[in-house]
Length: 126
Image (cartoon, rainbow, N blue to C red; front, side):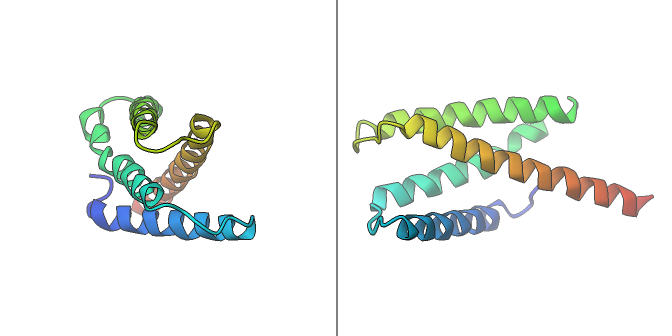
């Protein structure tokens, strides 16, 4: 399995995202964030990390194919989560655009870190 202790990674990513988002909002004059928004952020982090089981199901496929399948599945789930959230809280007019760019950006960064990590690991094994 790619990440053995998923709960720790979920907590770390959630914490980093929350601190970054809070700092960004404070710098832009936003002084409140609802509890629902924080719980939604945790759910998205848990979904993204928990979904790493998809890699196990498709490990015979090429690296990039697995990532494309994973991204489409998780992005669809995130959009569904945002849609459901619209029944509970009022969504920002750009909610879908914002979550797309935020999730995609973080996904790309994590994928790049993963590629670099495995390249370094392969070089050390040779």
